[in-house]
Image (cartoon, rainbow, N blue to C red; front, side, top):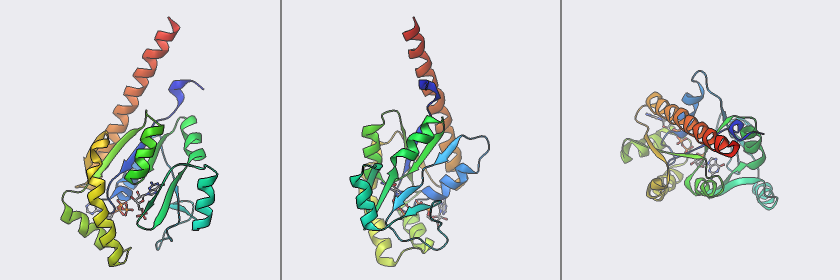
Length: 205
Ligand SMILES: Nc1ncnc2c1ncn2[C@@H]1O[C@H](COP(=O)(O)OP(=O)(O)OP(=O)(O)O)[C@@H](O)[C@H]1O
Ligand SMILES: Nc1nc2c(ncn2[C@@H]2O[C@H](COP(=O)(O)O)[C@@H](O)[C@H]2O)c(=O)[nH]1
């Protein structure tokens, strides 16, 4: 395949409860995009309403550990007691077919991707305030209070790594944040195409 036919990889991170999933869904509802969402594998039990194969591939711990051994993940990490990983073959397939692939993953995994895929774009979503983050996490009502505390505490470490990302986007308003992310994706796409075009021309000379 030609270099310029390969899609762009977009990594979105941010502390638990900041609104990554909500903003990503708003992004995918926009018109005229070429995005696909990479469904992760996890050992976390499904939340009410979550669908296997759409929200996550839900597996048990032994299956996940076996898949690590078989080198099936582009990246993986443990987050507050559960494993999460990105299936490598699906991401490669989608990129090879020219799609823009969105990963919504925590920071440890994102930094693994940074090492492997230099051309990927890294976006870190932040809340308007810490108070708003805590309130979103608590009000979502999907975790027991003790897990809410653990996830909120983990946010400190995640914030401290935000400087490793290419862009920081504030999720004050969902549509606002989705618009900003779409603008980043379009600009990065254009920049990548220009760079590839330049080098292809140079090689032809
Ligand atoms: N801009 C916003 N203003 C107010 N509430 C928001 C906003 N964005 C998201 N929320 C709410 O915050 C809660 C957490 O959002 P969401 O589940 O999308 O976060 P997340 O970052 O994907 O979390 P996790 O990493 O734990 O999966 C949800 O109840 C969602 O409706
Ligand atoms: N490193 C990875 N992190 C992932 C992946 N899929 C999701 N996540 C992140 O885990 C936490 C918790 O998710 P939750 O659904 O239990 O709230 C959150 O930050 C997700 O973005 C993955 O494949 N790899």
